[in-house]
Length: 403
Image (cartoon, rainbow, N blue to C red; front, top):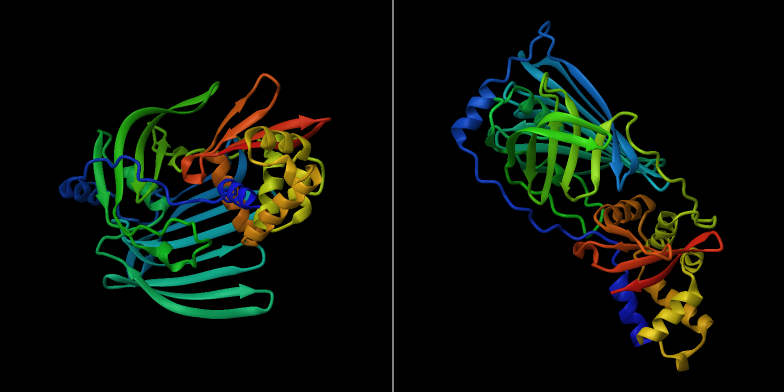
């Protein structure tokens, strides 16, 4: 059993760990940043400054949700402001999570106040916040079917000129100079106000937003490739490429660099997601991957049992020394491994488990062997193991795990 425990401990890594920092661009000059912010127009009516953009979230090559970015103009405390709204829906393997953020931004994109909601269909966290000097005062509550419960209010850092959100980035880039340049904007640590979704989630970074305008680029995959004007956007461990139309700076798409494997494309351009049902035979290797992951994370024994082709897994473990035949036959092997998987499960909520599994999938590399076996090599931050999937009589199973 000691060998079983060691094996399970090493392969049950379908969880996220904080990402290693990608290479940082050089620090931007304060003067260049100040000039770019000063060039942003006053958000007044009748100037045609409002815009809206809808897109699909794509993960590992398939649709995994949707986004909507919108900008309008308004007034707060008798001063013109940008009204920025971002709605994002993540849909993964049947679970759904929605986050909506509405912000009041000053002319230079400094965050002034706003509201936000994050829900998974059973629980919704609601934030209401306003700037008070160099802090953001945040009121929080939790809404469930049983009613509303107020959470402890908190304060998060909000340095002078601090901004927040993807829409603020789009506004900055819309009015930034065309030439290649680097910029650095202070940010408001609003993400620190959300309860952590899991213990592996990277802590919010209060550091500045680093924007590097690169110039001409391309976005998409053949044959649907568009010429763009683009910039890299980095904060903490996260980084992305934001591609805009060179003609009018409207959004074309967003490519995530860290973590990899995620994109935002124009509405209707994402490949449809694979339909999955953990209680049915897996019709693809992805379905087998999610069935196994759900079985472990949610501690559902039948999904673990049904996701693995035990005779093949048994033969591999015996040949590699992971299981001694004297310890028992295939049934004994199965019982030992399932028991160990269940004992290590954290019994996560479905939405949390799906986000972790999506992270594992999007950051992995995929290869197909001559016999049709699909090998999913996970990123070192997700364990660095190789999961082998194979179709047996029309049903896909996990057949081998290499540490």
